Length: 534
Ligand code: SF4
Image 1: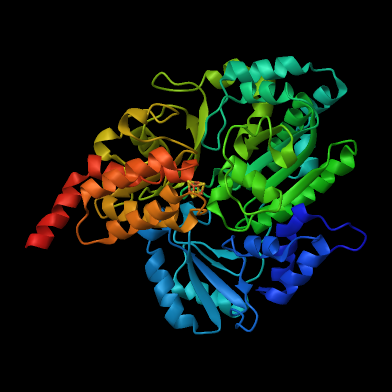
Image 2: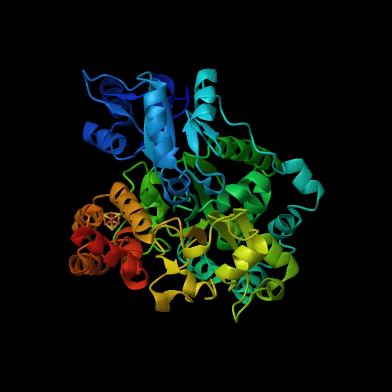
């Protein structure tokens, strides 16, 4: 614990990181000591230490894990690029001194397959590349070449913030511009941003703000892109939102998989605080490998130092959120757009869009396309247009067979529906949704059934375990989907129960890919049947 700073129970996860970074794992006696310092019951510390996937808890008398861990992504894009095979070959090649783990998406799907040695990502990884990094010890990833504070300011950045801060720009005109632009939350939920600002501003002070940079949805890497290129555009949007809504404290929650971005953000926030010392307190919080913490109330629990378990609603976080106060919760990208929309006007943003849709969207495109990456273009573009116009078409030898329009949770569409506009609401008739616009494209060399199984295993791994339909349902469905023959009736019934009775979006959306396979790729299930009877 830092000398001179009063230990705070809400910083429990930060302390656990500190212990693990120093000692390589979380040892039982250290946790007992931490509980005493924080004046928490031991159970409260142990339950948090054992909830998050990135913490290695070592019970008394047990052996600690090897000093170095290699994490190999096996989520959708990396699975298609041979992630599982890479993990298997590394396990036999690297020996017992290195631990090899298969892990869910690490947010670098445009460079699949990806392995992470210690904290150093290895892009387009193969066994030789990973072994070379292991031999060199796995250094920290270098800071990205982002626009830093001075350069951003010199190019006109923070002028809008200065105008808001000084009162030269009235706050209602800012909310009106967002409203006019039709800006919606870009973490997946799609709630209109202006309405959220007005709702939270109408609540009694003090009001808090929580920024979600957890992007754990397999296939999503847009927030990483924005932070690694132009972080101050987001920070300026955040400061403006805080001033307009009357925020007393800001917490930024960033996923553990982005250590270089965390360092970058910490440095740039220091610079911002030095420039405007009157800012409300801004705390940077480090996630610990739990997908469910992308859900707004689970993230709030995690910031408070608890297990990331979604809350029952109502009350909504806008009314009773972080530390019991009304909370404005936003994804990084929503705040990233604030400056442009206010400076250029709501009409500018709403002037983009195709096929009857309005605005701009950031599509994270990965899978079997020639040029994967973050594509910023019209809301309502179709998958076919996106791939042909922005991604250099399909990879040689690959033909479009299907795609995930919204990461693992958004369902799967076949190539015959590649001309549906991609936007909020447009995919609902097909049982899918766009969420955070993570587009994972697959070809005739892939099987939708196998990819849906991958997605269900992910949800089973990430379920927080709080409610039975999700905890038991995801595990049971993953088991049933591994069987040589799918039981379509049972899977449908199970999926319906999970959708109807799960507490949060994780359990409610988990059946989507499986149901898409039954609806759009029934020939794959029938082929299983034929193989069985042959
Ligand atoms: Fe937890 Fe799943 Fe229930 Fe959500 S649906 S609260 S992740 S068990």
